[in-house]
Image 1 (spheres, rainbow, N blue to C red):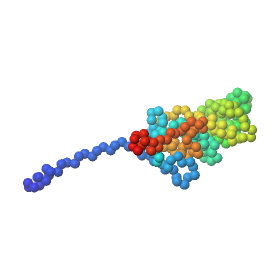
Image 2 (cartoon, rainbow, N blue to C red; image 1 turned 120 degrees about the vertical axis):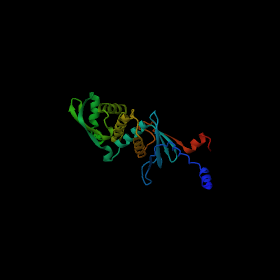
Image 3 (cartoon, rainbow, N blue to C red; image 1 turned 90 degrees about the vertical axis):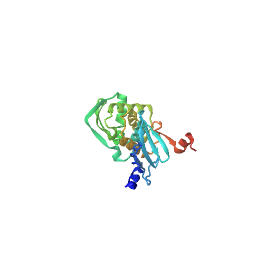
Image 4 (cartoon, rainbow, N blue to C red; image 1 turned 60 degrees about the vertical axis):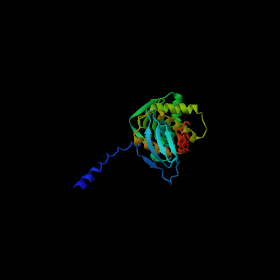
Length: 231
């Protein structure tokens, strides 16, 4: 009928649905409110990893840029000094490493075998300033052992001595081992980046690495608003 024809002509076809705007990786993790651990933020969302390697995250108070190398160094340092067995677990080497050291360095390792064992190493003397390494801390992964032991002996030499202060010596050794995490690593997956930030949240001092370098730079939402003249 004429009425039906006019009605159908007056109704335009609906437009096609718009494509959704790209979104950051939806990965949020809340820190338990009853936790006694340090909490640099209440929640965070991983946004991206720059080509330079830095991580960008959004938190309840602003935007944080994280140096993942310094973060790994801090995490490793605190785990090595932790009294918890799961954090200081050992991994047995498929092929034990035999390492010969100069007499002075060998004496330093010999005097530190107990502390090294407490951190997850299994080292025994093999004669003539030589040591056999059967296991290393699990957190070391496949990092080579010889440079780490050389770093330990160097740092013990440079740090002098404090008689009877075993904790001081343990901190020097942990700092030497943790420094092996400061090198370059492959680009992180979103899950790997989020796990790294979670582990950093559990640290007692997540803001600087053991050598005093910053782990993160925080820019508050208020500071961003001020710089963009939104206040």
